[in-house]
Image (cartoon, rainbow, N blue to C red; front, side, top):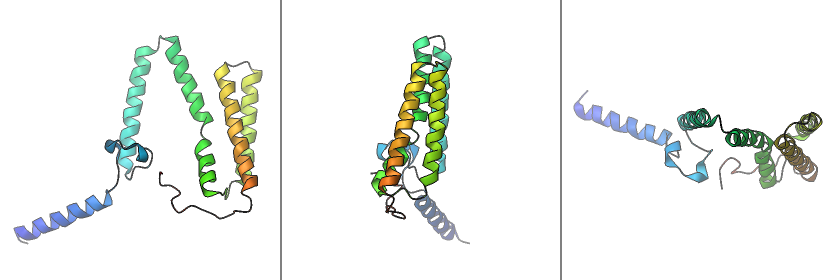
Length: 162
């Protein structure tokens, strides 16, 4: 094979790899594509940097009560908001396809967990976030009722950010 042939092969290979990885990555810092990266390595990069940064902060500020309480509250709040993306997707799609039994189970689990927080006198942030989680579950359950006639309706841009 000639040198020109090798160069041509490399250029085709580079163009193909560029097309495969065309899109957005972690290093683009484009907030519209924050959790919609086109390659898995960007996800790994972000999670690694996030874990290192959080671990370093916790190591440095472990003695500060306010910092530890804030981290705990953010963790509980993050869990409380797990249903929010589903709520928004249902609203956008005007459908709750495949969610009927699942929502009731979510709500039962979240209700029991919140009751446990309240009856065992856990700190305020636990039962506030538990109540928020149950409230989101109730809204999703209402969506199941509201969109019960729209079974099978899906948005074409379902997983693409606005």
